[in-house]
Length: 419
Image 1 (cartoon, rainbow, N blue to C red):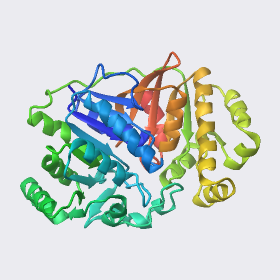
Image 2 (image 1 turned 135 degrees about the vertical axis):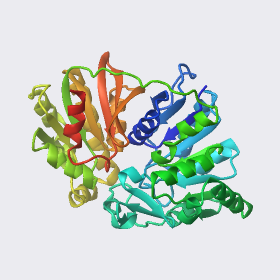
Image 3 (image 1 turned 90 degrees about the vertical axis):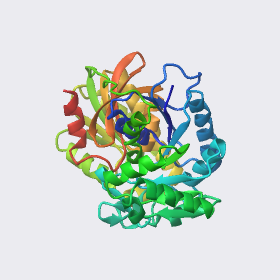
Image 4 (image 1 turned 120 degrees about the vertical axis):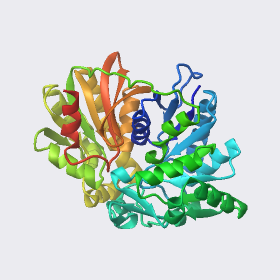
């Protein structure tokens, strides 16, 4: 029986969550999209990756409710709604609307919001989210092409997205321990507060929060607040002790990096990888005029084993110029469709190891490769594991990297790990 059913709002976030849960040695299944058939061969932790972060609210709510219905069939009684550690959302959602919809389905009177990930430089203090030492609104996330984050205060960000009151459990409460935090939740509940933002600046804070919330039917947050749950569930007798890590053999074949993210870290990673690999840059304006043939011809001209990267990664000014001419949705779709088509072409011509950067890109690529389930392997960087699957009859290794994760040498490090 599944102990925890998880829903993630994009594909990189799902692999991030699955990788952190798998650190414990527990069995983790990562499903790409909602499975078409009833649950079978389920794991202790089932993670469903959706692509609903920037969908219209009604579509996102409907999709997550369908995922919840499937997860309920696994026997799970506890659920986790995973979103980005930078709280990526618009003033309308989809973080809040989805959380309220899941609460209604589960009969949950209260839930928490904790996107902190200290290991990757994401912390929450007095309700404000920091990226490293920068408030969210002063970080590069302020220029995100789809979800620009112009406010650092999570309570102010969440309040317009929900219909019930929002409260805060600040760092001083968390520091007093599990019982004090649970008492604080109970007092907020008496005051009608259904949505509680919780501060966290360290892994110790995350453990306190996870212990205090382990009995909740719904927890929401970034992946790191779920990381302590396997050990807690073992202590509660809900999870068997000491499952062995799955063993994976890296498939032999060519390599390819595909990057659609325009985050500051991914721009640095692309620049670093171009020092050791050949690259082809996709320009949305050129794709609109000429299609993807030039990129396909370039890819086919290169040996499968040669280090290479195809990328649409660009600075905010260039991204904005393309969006102004094509529209935000069309500019993004042109890039996603091109990278998806190139991934399939590469697979059919001998590529077996893919590094993919960006949530929207990861969704497009996995869909194109007809991937519906991933086995979780070793982490390359915190929250970014290698995963393994079969695509078109070929065994492939695939890593799906959130834009801001990893060091500047991430692409080379990832491929080196497989050797």
